[in-house]
Length: 129
Image 1 (cartoon, rainbow, N blue to C red):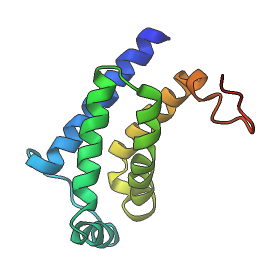
Image 2: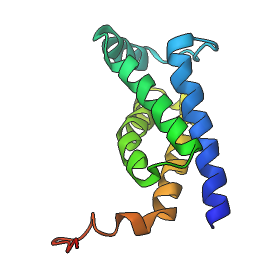
Image 3: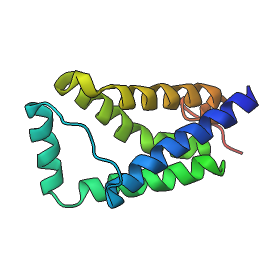
Image 4: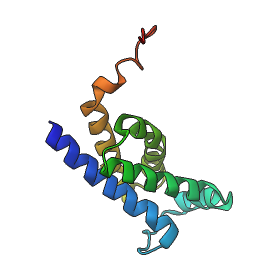
C-alpha cells in the first residue's frame, strides 16, 4: 500500500502542480465552459484574488505531495478547492468534469490511505499526550 500511496501522491502532486502553474503561465488553454459555469468562474475571476490564491495553493500542495511532506495536512487544505471544482462541473458544466473527478478520487483515496493520521480529528475528546 505504501508504494501505491507514494506513486498516487506523486501523480496527484504533478496534476496539481501543472494546473496551478497553468493558472499563472497559461501554457495550455482551459476548455470552454457552459454559460452558467463561465458566469460563475467569471465572477470569481473579477475578485482579483481567488484564482491566484487557488493557483498558489495548487503549486504548494503539488510540490509537497511530490516530496512527501505534510501529506495528511495538505490533503485537508486542498480538498475544499477540489470539491468546489468538482461541484462546479457536476452542476454547471458536466462535460468538463473529468479533471476534477480524477482529483476528487485521488484526494479521497489518499485520505483513506492516510486514515491513521486523522484518527484524533474524529474523536470527541482526543487525549493528546
